[in-house]
Image 1: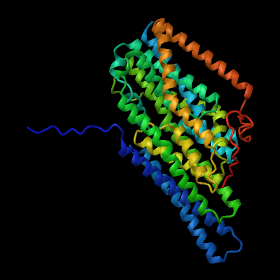
Image 2: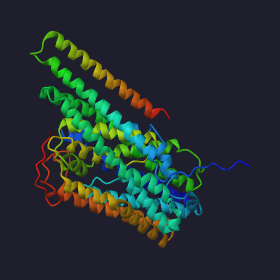
Image 3: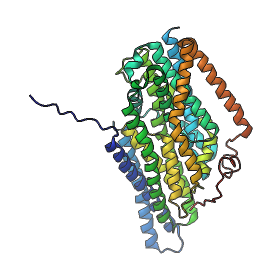
Length: 83
Length: 391
């Protein structure tokens, strides 16, 4: 006769708490990081002292960073709604 | 008096609680936006109101946790009238505590007030054995300790990162960009709040409907409950809990747009992720933790810890205090019969709420003075001589 293999449910769902910490931490740091990188590059792009190529690279990075935020936000919202 | 009449009373009081939850927690989403003047106070509150309403429709996972994980539903189902009176008294206790903390401008948890109220009333009705203590520890106490710590930690990292990365940016672009970012993050946070908090009342109304036998124990939350709760929290948010907005926006630290953005993104991330896992976190604790973390993330680490300590103390007593109010309300309701007793309890609550409201008008805080320097209104409440600076 097969023995019952029920595992007692832990009182505190540590696995969920850790997931919340890591996922939310990653989401916050990535979005804030991308946003500030975008801002910094946008600021460099607007700078009158920077040369043409540098301004172009900064513009490119800023666009990529802001698009990255949009993508991460989309993923985040999709993640929340996917249940 | 029929149990249906008590059920109607319960739904009315539940909607009332959701309304107080809205104005009590408006600050969670909009306080940094208002403090840094990214949006005008009224505009910020109106935006928060609409998005709280929208957010309430996004998920029902937390509602299920609240309805099933805190008290033994079988005990509530023993007697319809008594079961409904328990839910009613719990809501009364939660509203009483919410109004009291709002008056003092303390950002305490509406969710814990609700859970405390229901637990207190349930103990008064059926004793401690009717409480799922494992659920209280695992789903309420542990997350309530973890939530602000997570938020402090993540917000401190996000603020430091943000500060370091924008050191060389020109102040005009930085300020403009951060304010725009704050509006976006505030919107996200409002949705997160609606998603997380409206569900708690939905859970309680569902519990009352189960107790009355209107729906089965395994039934999902009815659509009308979702709509009514979403409307109530949206309207409550629109009223704007200015006293708490002031504490969160001006009390803990002098917020800069960079800090505001980082703290709001952190709060949104933590609340939305916890909603995804059905963990009923306190949005207030998360928002407060994020603001504290953003203060720690500044170069001067400027935080008014004395105020933070007092707020933490109020968090410790929220569950027992709301529980005591809930138990008192239940004894009052049972003393004169559940039907009439519930009416008397409701009237007593209305009188208490009115007296607090009238008292608050002596020291009025609204959209015009919410950003006044800290100390102008609460000198007795805060006596630190620190002068925190933004970055």
